[in-house]
Image (cartoon, rainbow, N blue to C red; front, side, top):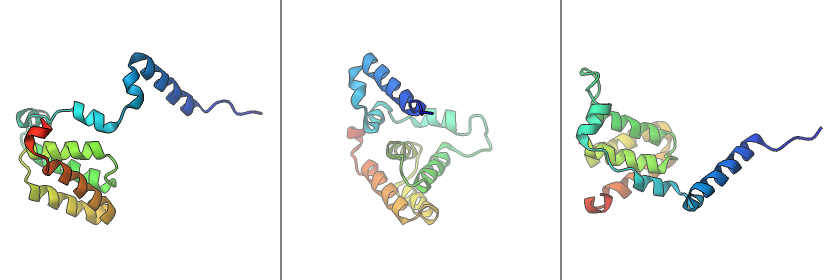
Length: 135
């Protein structure tokens, strides 16, 4: 009995062929490029969708962004674009550099020093970038 082609590999190949046919530039897609497509959400919009709009007694957008940052750090800071995006959104929602550093530091207690170090490095990239470069 011979094994047929790996269905997962075939699905990936078909997706790559489709992307190449639709837009040849997608052949060289990088997550860093995706990050540039996603602007920082304005604080009012963030608060409307992720804040207290639907749950007035609930967490505000800033707290939710800091919790998200903590989770991304504990995961090992593998999702670099998502972590940088979350830092930008946390700042937009009112988080300070100190609050971001404390959040990552606390998450390091659960995710480990390598995860914390990587998250601090990624957050630093965002926090040290002048505002006019991020717009």
